[in-house]
Amino acid sequence: MSPRAYLDGASTQPLRPEVRAELLAAWSEPAADPGRIHTEGSEARAQLEHARDRVAAAVGTRGRSVVFTSGGTEAIAAACFGAAQRGPHSVAAPVEHSAVRSWAERGPVTWVDVDTMGRVDPGALLDAIRSDTGIVHLQWANHEVGTRQRLTEVVAGCREAGVLCHVDACGALGHDEIAFDELGADLMSVSGHKLGGPPGVGALLVRRGVRLDPLLVGGDQERGRRAGMEPVGLARGFAVAVDVAVAGRPSRASFFRGQTDRVAAWARGFPGVRVLGDPVDRLDHLLCLGFDDVEPQPVLIGLDQAGVAVHSGSSCASEGLEPSPVLAAMGVDDQRSMRISLSWSTTAHDVDRFLAVAPDVLSSLGALRSRYTAPPN
Image (cartoon, helix red, strand yellow):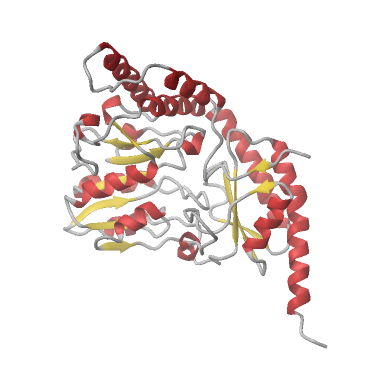
């Protein structure tokens, strides 16, 4: 039986072998609390800070700006919680990840419309700032359709207005070049498992001089910014994943773009299929397709039975296939979509397999639908 083609890398990616080796090495060593002054604790502290510096170097900042978290969701929560102490109101577009949307909805929020590509107008975002605004959210690139956002103008406008700007870069880390200090954003959330690192670790990047009340309290870990014993092993694995992903980014980006362009070319020539989001200014490894007259569940099942794993619906739904708030905000069909997203382990043969089986799956479903919806004689 042929190996399966895993094309859901934007959800999570397989653990990189270099990361697995690092985790095994870390967890084979004696455990110690990096907050202790004995030799074992000092060694754990040195390992933690080395991992922090490696992550910082990969995203263009200093080690002290990196706050390790349990993942991107917690990093976003920490940014939102801390910002709420400055002002209860937030500004965001409805295409943000559910972790951002859910926190924004806890207080007054102004939702700013996006265009049909899923891109928000920077001026409209800045115009929504009020006297009680604590934070403005703008994702680096959309997690469902891949469209990149216009960050520079928003970051500068927020700085001028004295309002915190948070950038969700969980889906972009390892795929786009990130220079946190150069961008000038106040806060940025990143995650490990979306680039082949271990699940359960991420980071909140905090601009120098920004002070936030911590979401998690109870200890002075992470310089008082996040309580709880630091996950030294996971931090080491995260650092290795970032190192490898960033080092290989130029060549992988070219490969990813070539493969997703192949899928886009097929979609443009297949009846009832279209590309959603910006076809050019998007993340290289991600492509979202929309369907006419075919439900996503049988498409996913048909592809899965043919050995291809993809995703459909809201990218943050843990179970089932929910309508996509992102696509709804773009003004397109929010119930019939499919996201193809590549990972470090993807080969051209994986995409070949998708292109070989997808036409048959869609054609058979279309024929079945026509059969049961045709008017009686």
